[in-house]
Image: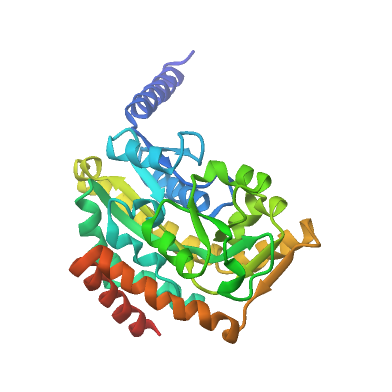
Amino acid sequence: MTGRKSEILGAVSAVAMLAVATAAQAETWRYATEEAAAADVQNVFAEKFKEEVEANSDHVIQLFPFGTLGESDDIMEQTKAGILQFVDQSPGFTGATIPEAQVFFVPYLLPQNNEDLVEFFRTSVAINEMFPELYAQQGLELLTMFPEGEVCMTTQEPVHSPADLDEVKFRVMTNPLLVQSYEAFGAVPTPLTWGEVYGALQTGIIQGQENPGFFLDSTKIYEVTDVITCIGHNNFTTAVMANKAFYDGLSEEDQQVIQNATQAAFDYIVDYQATLQEQALANIKEAKPDMEINTLDAAERQPFMDAAAEVEATFIEMTGDGGQAILDQMKADLEAVQ
């Protein structure tokens, strides 16, 4: 072997050893979501976040879809304990510890127009300035909130008015305001963890539940229900958070990597979910042709909208001045984009 070749091989070997050492030093960050399927919105966001972080740092993101680490309450506790660095969780589950987050369950508050909805999430003072302070008090760094899609009800019988929900046992998340919403709508709200829902519908323990269309599709919940009804009352909102002690302990460079990845994933996901609802409902109809899918018109929605006033009043009673301030700011933010 010539001396020149030896020098080249020695240089390559040194670079390889340095790469191995660098890889060994790379920190793995763990990130859990509330959804199981790869095409579900939270997981698509998480994959984009992972791609951006790994492309722009030496860190590795390990993803844990729903069920791999337990239920929603479990992954939140693991995040607060620092076992997980990131978690995606709906305000529906954080409402017990951050009561003001229940504002996202005031019916008919969020716009139905997707363009206005996305602009609201981008620019809202309530979301981008007020909520981070509330999450910080719980040891969480709020990175972003984003919409996942219009929420629709599934039931065994058609629903055209609140009277059609009379005595219907309706699964809700463990969220006080969501309980109040379905009481106002005439149903019997029944809090259950998601893992119990399919079986409870199958056995008749409950007769209804709500979720965005893509989730009804991916979880095949349509197999144990007969009617989907969209009344325009809400768009499912979720929040991506980091353990605050972990985040605060990062270098400014790593914090910027996370912020950039969050923004890139947000931009990606709002485009991804824009037409997801229509496609999901079409998928369900194809899979189950006798599935009845109804979208209520303005006249049919009005009684539900009238009931929403009662829910808004309950939200203010539950949360006091802090909730009133959040609600007022959200309404101002919504007015600005509409």
